[in-house]
Image (cartoon, rainbow, N blue to C red):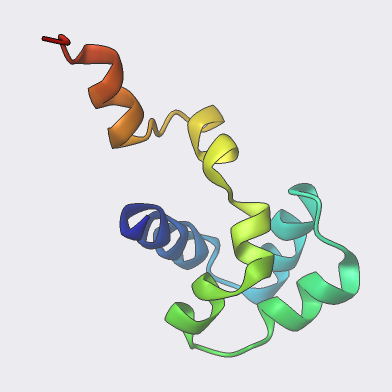
Length: 82
C-alpha cells in the first residue's frame, strides 16, 4: 500500500503544473471541478496523494495497466507452494 502511495506521489510530481494535473485527472475520469480543486491545492504533495480523488484516479488496476505490477501479485505468481 505504501508503495502505491509513493508511486502516486511520483506521478503527481511528474505532471508538474496545475494545468497538466487537471488535464491528466480528467483523462482518468475525474470531474472538471474536482480536478481543478485537487490540482490547485498547492505544494502539499503528501496531502494530495492521500485524498480519495487521487486514489480513485490512480488505483491498483490503472497502475497495473501502466506496467507496474503489485509485489504481492508478483510473489504469489512466482512462489512455489509447498
